[in-house]
Image (cartoon, rainbow, N blue to C red):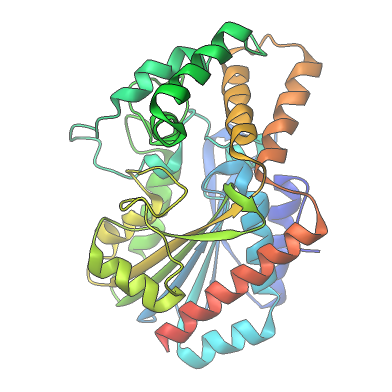
Length: 356
């Protein structure tokens, strides 16, 4: 069984899978945050192959915390797949498994980290002016009301915004990322997070030798149930998009040209490769697996955000909201898990094929 019910269980399985291959993962312990049950939190890295290899395949889980239940399951399936590991050896590709980029959110069933930061909006230059996302200010108060569940007037105001501007405009306003409301949704932070700094440190360890880098970042919460949309996780560059399509097929979508179900984003995790591995050619995607309909996912995010701001919430409401958030990003069903693993294996194999 590759999928877990808690962060601690997932981490234990990851360590056991690595140990069975004779690998001792490198543990990066969070210096301050603790898990839901008081456990130590860490980002764990297992390197399969020569750390000085010229070709790398990076597989990351839990960038968005609670989405790590899916990503961890995919990583464990690949760690336990002899054919995949043999293919990596044959092509000379070192596979880097980064487990729980955001261990706090993984443990607490939250999409954001200990500082309410969305890590996939955090990887940009915080010394420069932030990308403008003025529309978020228009909906912030509606997204995070004073009480939960929100009243009819609040929901009617959101419906009016959608009626006037369309669902796509609402999605962009909400999820495109923003840097002005630390208590809001999709907050990109105002400085590099611990996870940001840690990922950059581990990437620099490969910098002297890496020349070809493929990256697959596992996500959930957008699209049809179980379907993995392959989203180009890179800068806005037509040649790089073409290269990603050459690896994973024409089904690769882009947040920049409107072909993706995702809003246009800034500060993507995988873009750290450009800065920390500048001598390498980078090609990357995020696999975005569908779970529940988009309105239900957004409602779960609003509820979880409200809960962060209201620690006085009674235990029953707290339990209901945290479960609502987990269920929005992890479908604990055999058919869903099977298709997640199948698609993850196909994408990882495609990367190895391109590298070889």
